[in-house]
Length: 237
Image 1 (cartoon, rainbow, N blue to C red):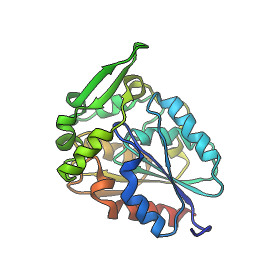
Image 2 (cartoon, rainbow, N blue to C red):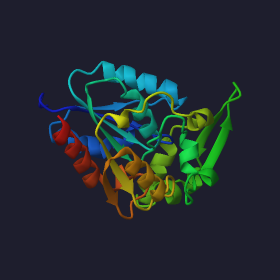
Image 3 (tube, rainbow, N blue to C red):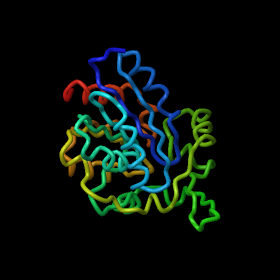
């Protein structure tokens, strides 16, 4: 891999894991980028951000930090104070302001099916894990992905706690000081496109709309996804 290129760090969101990034990882690696798919615990926004921040601190050289969905809220906190993070890329993602939760943002505009899609699993400590019901994973979460592939993602999904989705963002948000880019999925049934547009405009992002794309835009449309990540890398490192 070329040492003059930044490391691309990918942070998955709720109801997912790093395996969803396989196609874009292959393309980024083929183009010479070092890539790390960060594990996102999905236990609490502040604790998740601290874990990703620790990983970022271990990486030498410039970083382009990419977050999908809830992962966008995580990277917004994790990148704060790290001078090596040169750009943030949001993929159908939450971009909260201090004090906002992802739950609050998803309810800000009409059109999300996430509330009716959730399957709760009570935990022994009184918390609750939330999954997307596999019966609606394809139409609600991954509408433009092949049904067979969507079924595999539904099986492999990792739950987020209700507390994580309801926890307000704390402290300075990195998008205030770091250049950011936003890939909006135009047919998203999890985060309404209007909500994505609102957050992207507020953050001053360079925006690309992918018409007809579901919430899993990086799976169904790897070309535009990789192009935006590499644009962020080339313009800021």
